[in-house]
Each structure stands twice: as C-alpha cells, then as structure tokens.
Image 1 (cartoon, rainbow, N blue to C red):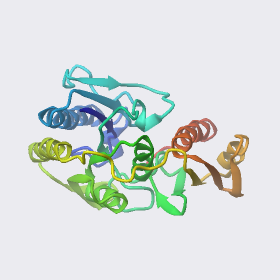
Image 2 (image 1 turned 135 degrees about the horizontal axis):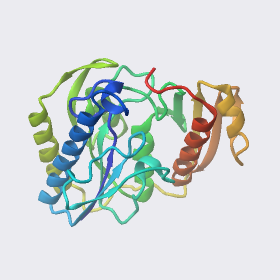
Image 3 (image 1 turned 90 degrees about the vertical axis):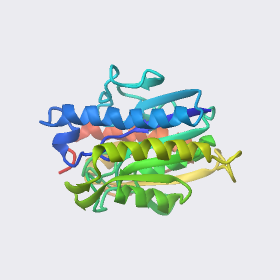
Image 4 (image 1 turned 30 degrees about the vertical axis):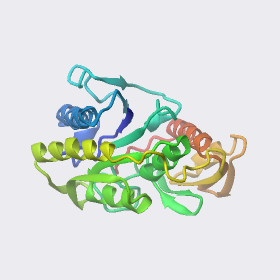
Length: 279
C-alpha cells in the first residue's frame, strides 16, 4: 500500500496565529517542530496499517517547513517550490490513499487561520457551482486520480468542511476554533495519538476498490473571485480564461488540468500583488 500525505500548517496541533506558521514569526520554529511531529504520527499510523511507501509533500507557504532531520526516516519528503501541482505535488494514480494533515477552512469561514490559498487575496472559489477552498479542490483532484482521501486533520471547522465534501473521510480535530486566531487546543500528546490511531484505522478500512471513481476527463468549471482587479486582468491573458466581472475569472477543463492551472493563477497573483496573508 502506497500512501500520499499533503501537509499544510494552519491546522497543525497547537498553532493558532500567523506568528506560528510564517517565517520569521516568533513561534514559527516551534511550529515547524509540531508540524513534523504531527506528520510523524501519521507516518507511524500508515506503516502500522501496512504501508509499503509513504510520500510526504510539504504543502504550506514556502513549502520548506518540515524538518527532514526530525522526520520519520521511512517517509520520503518533497520540499520547496515552485511545484506544478502545489499542495498535491507527487500524487499519482499509483497511490492507494491520500492523507491531508494540518488543513484549514476556506476563506470566509470562521475557522483558525481560515483562507483559500492566498490570505485575503482570494475571496471565493467555486468548483462548478459549489463554493470551495483548499480542501475541496484537493479532494476533487485526488478523485480524478482515483485516489481516495482517507483522513484529514485540522480544527473543527476544517473537519466539518471535509465531511461536507465526503462523509467517508475520517477526521481528527486537533483544536476547536474560538475565532480566526484563537482556539481551544487538544493536548499535543492526545492529538498526535489520535492522528496515529485514526490514520491506521482509516487505511485499514479502505474499500477494496474506489466506489464510482471520478472520470478524469470530465470537464469542470473553476471560478475564482479575487480581491484585486489587477489579478483578473493579468489572468485573462491565459488561453481559455475568461472574465466574469472585474474581479472574477472562470475557466473550464478536466480536473487535473484545472488544479495545475490554478497553481499558475497563484504564481501570477503573487507577481502582481503585495498583499500579506492572514490580514
């Protein structure tokens, strides 16, 4: 069994503030340790469930957060950016399951460090007609590969968001949102024990075959509403991208092409804006 792990940071055990998840924040280095320890808990659970290989993708911000010297040596790490598939770099149809660690709720939801990919720069994302964020897009792209998402960890709002997309995904709430930068924390040892146990159980209970897998050739529609009209103006130079209004673009393609194209959107937006995230 081959297991893929995408690790974000905002939903990691014990972290609640930009100072915890952004360099050179005063608690960022401690946040990196906690991120690595949450990942190790999932790796242990995966191998306990019978995994033969585990690939970990550092999926947060600079994508240089996980500490290789502290990471379980049985795991292989993808680190750094840019990566064509961003938060799901390295995932292919060869994997039997995907895990989402440290994820957060979409923009506009009152969850810990909630946003969609770019702080306040992205106001909303729709896949077809369904409002989504990082959780929904990754789930849809994984489905296009035929890979089930087996588990997600994060705050309670992120867990609820995943359950709304797919109630079969096991979730581990490691904190309960009180506001965007405040939470009631699950004790670290308890949270990481739950991650390990839930990973093992989720992988042991994978269906023998993926039920009604998504057709990777199905044409989907992605719509993104930006804070800046300048971003929209630049994105319309990409073939197939149309402007719905001054701050909203839309494009249609198969899901995996959409996900790769969206990562190009992020690079264009980064080049033409200077808005700090989480503001």
